[in-house]
Image (cartoon, rainbow, N blue to C red; front, side):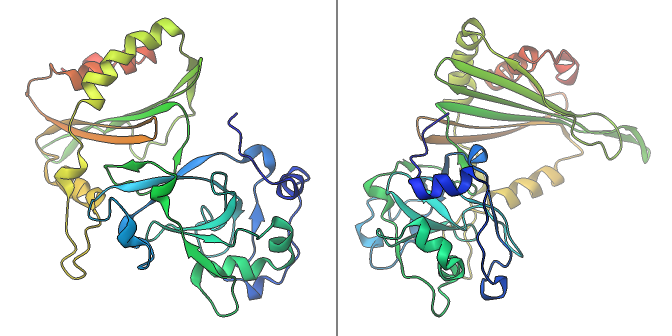
Length: 330
């Protein structure tokens, strides 16, 4: 497990599975509960240059670029009222400060460098409300991520787990209809690989070809060094060396002239519009050495199926003993 470098008072509080005594009515996030110590994990929180404080943004060497900074943090809140809890209060192990990540705008502010967990626990609403800059809330400053954190050339929209490297691949085989009769329902597999040092684990989940199918429980297995060595070159040619799909889904918000990417909406529309001619889609995202990459590819019925992307897809599926992959790609 990676070191989270937690302060002693916070570590003791979470280890004992305690909760803070306060008036939820005074807190914008209402009733809050915290993760126990053994459920904390280190993540990268994306921070967009466009959302940094106006006083600091001119110092940003990537201010005019469309990527984001990947800032390491530990989300402390497990649940709350009316909001997504992730990022509402973070421990920032590199800054050694507490921070608040804004999931709506991918911005991050820091509480004072002298703020301790003991102080936060004594007046939790004051510090939580700082995320909305409410009257009487604790002061914050915008983080300067370029000083200590990597810049990623592709924008990210959600926190990413920190490992030496990880990959998550989804293959969707569309259903088939003839004369308004459903011949076959859609089917999907999801493969995730995580590697840290000598440890490497893969998991497979599946939505079977059934109406309203649910995801199966993960089927997990360890990958030995020989298997990993076989997969590595395929990851280079079939993933890392492929152009990012985000550029294809770039969309400028004309009302605000914002450069934020709305790629997930564009992707959904493109897939919906091409269902009649698309046999299956492949989506893979991964993180390695602080660099995130994403790849989307659609394959039409009757198109050429022999390329490096699908070679990777076949290999990952067979590592997870999903032999139906050959039938899917006919």
